[in-house]
Length: 410
Image (cartoon, rainbow, N blue to C red; front, side, top):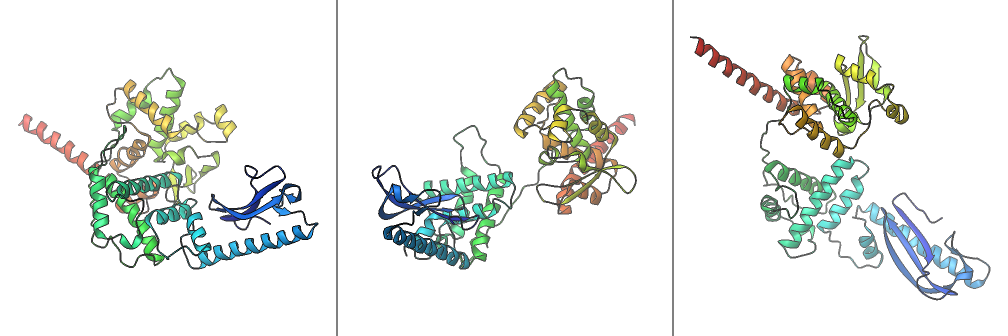
């Protein structure tokens, strides 16, 4: 049996790129979390005596029996090494496994190994989008170590407050070499937050004694969340598009404006997500992908209209989906085209629809913040309060205009 666990396997094979047609060198291929190392057994084996499918010698001769005993002993030692590293909560990568196996280790962990450990360990627990953000943070850390410290890697015990603070300054002054924009303050802080979570993992595993972030202060700047006004939304709703894809994009966007669902949830919806609520009305029920929280939204007439429109749609029937599916990149590209045709100068993205639901559709019309928070699937009410500040600003602006009109009339 070659496979040991979902994360660890050992396969013995002959390397046909070396040796002769009759005899080839024996190797052990060890796979850890889908990454491989190849270890030479320093031994030539007759091809005719090797069972490729079982990874063992054809057990007929004394030499074959001896080889199989050798292979079994090696496999047992590899498995024992892996289990021991697991019990000791060590960072397990092909490199650290090889070092542990051959005694070439001093017990020190590095930043790159820690990042690999976190990303491998969390890839099934976090969403694809969140993992992409961690990979980006890892890329910036690698650049910082390479360009500022002139090194390939750094030991965890060397990471202190100065390292953390210097990394933040590196991000603040980083000038991208492609089409990307420089990092803003909040984007920078998101990278620092992810870095801190990974460092916390090292602290919990007792790979770091002192928290290098203990004196670091996170400063997120408040920003106004964009949204569409009632008039702008109406313009999009009544616009007649001659191109079918824009008509579909508009419908997906408007559906989100009236339900608050994010892109990843909108394209994953199925007819079963629509159920009859306790009040006899249609409700949208789902688990939000980002936070895995249960979301229940009573459907407004416009949302129901769109659901009915796409029930007979061939793509929806074929895919078993509530609405037609489209990649987020294509969708946002078409939204910019749609904004131009509608004369809307705001940066139209699909997430803007979620903001519009929170502000224009619900909070502005008196829906309590607690209810809006539940419908948006927020885990903290403070997240919803950001939208409330936008609504308060709008009320302030409206009252300012009213004061001006009243002053003119006096």
